[in-house]
Image (cartoon, rainbow over all chains, first blue to last red; front, side, top):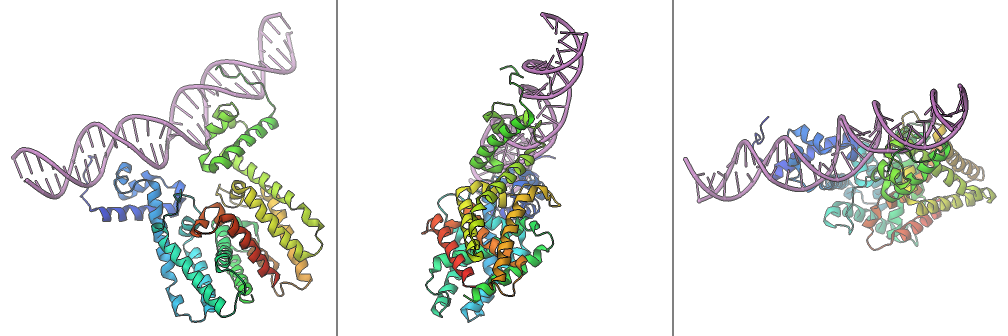
Length: 203
Length: 203
DNA sequence: TTTTGTAAATGAACACTGTTCATTATTTTT
DNA sequence: AAAAATAATGAACAGTGTTCATTTACAAAA
């Protein structure tokens, strides 16, 4: 095949095209297992061409990372209609778990995979993640004002609660639930989060 | 340098030599970042030679995996001197966190990294991990008998508690604590586990 | 002591990876 | 139609895990 036979595309369309192929292959084979050549093949371009639209593989990773957080934050919208803060907290936990279960690989990419998450913490790239965490903190503040979680710092409390949810999701994503031989993974998660909620409620 | 200049070593010694080099490089550069050539270089052998002692890179991974669980289980020994089950549970949580903080990369390898954890769940390879989980379950059973955790299944309860601890460690290992810009990672973990303990105690 | 058989170690090779870049093809502008 | 700018290519580079024919070293037999 002779080169240059593709119709010119505008930059943003091309980025989107690459991103879609990258996503489907990342989620199939994981970040490490997805080669740029396989991504390029899927959309009928050469591997080198990708570098005209993304600096490197990491930039593709970060683009998907951002998209994931936009999706997660989007799923949180119904929470704004829950008036009681404790009920909102519980609902948030359920949404979080639902997201992880329905988007296993994407969750992995967002919260577990290590792609140089460039030192210095780029605020821009974490905006949606930051807003989601902000949402949790705000809910906890309101809970505090209603008398829950007495004498606890929202900073540490939010970390502890996030970790509780993440722990289950992470063990699930990375196949460590198999040590529970006689219990289905999904059952483990569903019950686990119920127990966690019960615990938080009674606190 | 001419080949074959090394003195003959017995199989087990050689495996140990490779394992030590592999460990130090894995913990330096991570599992993916550690090349077999760099491991071989460190002990003055060729890369191909490693394949006489290990089937592939994964087998090295699993050997270190086992060692990690032996170490962790070893650190749990003092727990047998704590008579009150709730105090034993709390102590176990602290030991677990200490292990993760002092052996960050090893913890990562044991609980987060994905190396084909061959399907089917090989009991042999998970013996120590299984015993550690068994220890947790036993403590929880004793707690139950003393009136704690009423109406809760030890299976799900243990998973929830393990997840709570693991969540913090996993966010730490994979650099997701940076979203807490103004709080030191270690402080976050230390306070996080204290809050978690407080919560469990009051349950 | 020399020969022989075996086990250990090698280094080249294979197919793959992410990435770069000079070259070519296409599109746009003049 | 010619020139300038953009887009895409494919070869190349240095790296990876892995395999294997070949070479070396060592121990036992002659």
